[in-house]
Amino acid sequence: MNLNRLLPWVPLLTLLSLVTAACLLLSSRLGEAYDFLRWDVTLAWIPVPMALLFMLLDGLKARWVRRLLRALVAAVWLAFFPNSAYLVTELLHAFRFFEMQPGFWTGIDYWYRVMPIFGVACLGLALSASSLYLLHRWTSARLGALTGWFFAAAALALASFGVYIGRILRWNSWDLAARPQMIVTELAALYQDTSRWSHAVSFVELFFAVLFLSYGIFYTAIVLGAKGSPAPASLQ
Image (cartoon, rainbow, N blue to C red; front, side, top):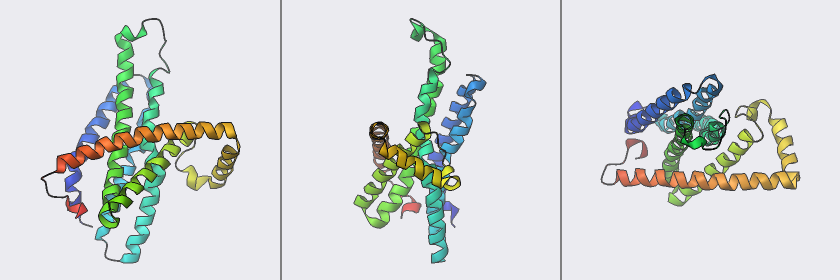
């Protein structure tokens, strides 16, 4: 595998790393009650190296090995992909331990609590868009632009549902392998309950709209920024 193919992505990875460090530093000042953010941010990062590894597998000459590893890496990416967007739901914790009183928004303590959590939410959108962009471009280069956008939309829809089952049903990514029977049973029960299913659909629709819009902005910014520059080696 030729690691030089990762060079075009070093600036983006560096920026994401700096933002992550800043978010974790600021959130650490909120107290031990917010230590869970470190774990959640770590999980949110997993899809990025998985997407990079997926692209690097193009360098393997053994076709069957390449296909097997691609399938495994893609499965891991898809299982953890919702964890990036999940960071958006951390916004609820901005008020979790804050005493709401009249005029609370005028106090500086309120903003010191809100802004780090807002930064974590934005980081989640950026990590989600970054790993999806890598695989979106890889798919488009080989199967066409229409298929690439279909893949991106499908991935965002699945991620939206993944956020629902993570935040509302409280499942983890590894439950797909550890407790698959439980997941199938609970999904069947969810579908049969009209009220709960309607709630799930509404949540997924709203989250999909947010994710698709943020990804569209990210994609447009990358494409406009790349105009007049040679395509990254990883995409050629």
